[in-house]
Amino acid sequence: MVDRQRVVIVGSGFAGFECARKLSRIVAKAGRTDVEIVLVSPTDYMLYTPLLPDVAGGLIDPRFVAIPLLNALPKVQLRIGAVTAVDLDRRTLRVDDGHSEDRELSWDRLVLTPGSVTRLFDIPGLAEHANGLKSVAEALYLREQLLRQLELADQEDDEAVRRARRTVVVVGASYAGTELVAQLKALADTYADRRGIDPRKFRFLLLDTADQVMPEVGEQLGDKVLEVLRGRGIDIRLGTTLKELSPGRVLLTDGTEVATHTVAWVTGVEGAPLLKTLGLELQKGRLVVDADLSVPGRRDVFAGGDAAAVPDLTKPGQITPPTAQHASRQGKALARNVAASLGIGATRDYRHRDMGLVVDLGPGFAVANPLGVQLSGRFAKAVARGYHVFAVPRGVNRWAVSLAYATNLVTPRPLALLGLVSREEAGFARSEGIDS
Ligand SMILES: Cc1cc2nc3c(=O)[nH]c(=O)nc-3n(C[C@H](O)[C@H](O)[C@H](O)COP(=O)(O)OP(=O)(O)OC[C@H]3O[C@@H](n4cnc5c(N)ncnc54)[C@H](O)[C@@H]3O)c2cc1C
Image (cartoon, rainbow, N blue to C red):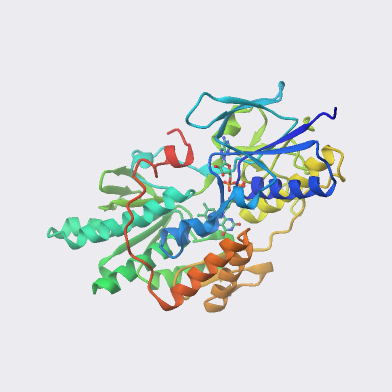
């Protein structure tokens, strides 16, 4: 009898999804029936996170950015649950499905791709009164919270209370936070238009400790973004962050007190909590791996994506940044190298030169720097949308996203409140698994 080899992949984000997809193809092509691929994930979908700001802005439906694993990965076994512990000596791990006792699963090759979670700081009230943007629940909650507050404001007689309900604070002016504030503002503008309210009555603040917005796209494009967003009435305060949060109020480090019920915290990420429990070496909270994505000294354990500190062979001495661009390519490299460890093909080091970033900033404006070429305005918008439609990893989802964009060209964003996500479900603990 042939010994079966079980490859367990932890996490169904960009890296885990692409690894499972490519590995199942490689194994099938090699005619190897002795290799079993198991994907462990708390969700039964892969989330295309770059479009979460569009979900929060009510531009696209959350199902469009959720790639169903059962449809997309028919040859991969799914285990819905979170890995709570890994025993590297016994080659086992434990899975919590939230309903029964933790179950043990053995593995012959382990691929660690649990990604990252929002980085929280020791700011009083932050975990209780702010929301992140890493999950469907968080994106939907922000959309609903904004619409709910705008509706409540309209029924309010007290001017101060009305003003607080019409105020939104977003912290983090890198690409995700900047896209979010632009999309929320566009949603509020649509609301104002339908209700016949002056949109200048809504107050949007974007804060960051840095002295530039979106350092990822360089100073020139960053300045352009600053000019356009300020022109839309967004109050951008650089060198400023939150000092304290309490119900209905935030205090900024510049001493300003702002009354608000909607605070988004999008300041960056750190490695998934599981990584700290493994007893393996970490660099900046990410798992140290060799250039072939294996954990040093372990030819049976691999890691990639936001969870791993992957040497950037194109920039000696640096590690690859936590982006979808790298994570999905590392997923494919993981598949190749895991297959090689099982005797199919040869191992290759991971090497990828950054292709730049596209940042969609609401109506008629985007910036992009594909291959170092600086673009802004409507052409950049077409490039950004085209890129995302192309990059969504499933045809049906691609089609749905394209239709949503096309629909938005001729009709305003839908403003209905579904009220499906509670504050608790959208909190950092429930939606991202962060203990705070
Ligand atoms: C709002 C936003 C916008 C972004 N925009 C861009 C962009 O435009 N371009 C770009 O390149 N990048 C972008 N990024 C970054 C990009 O999303 C990440 O770099 C990418 O998701 C990393 O992929 P990953 O597979 O490593 O991790 P993730 O996508 O985070 O996936 C990790 C998976 O592991 C699961 N998991 C976690 N812990 C466990 C556990 N214990 N057991 C089992 N499963 C677990 C998680 O549930 C998740 O499904 C954006 C991120 C955000 C939040």
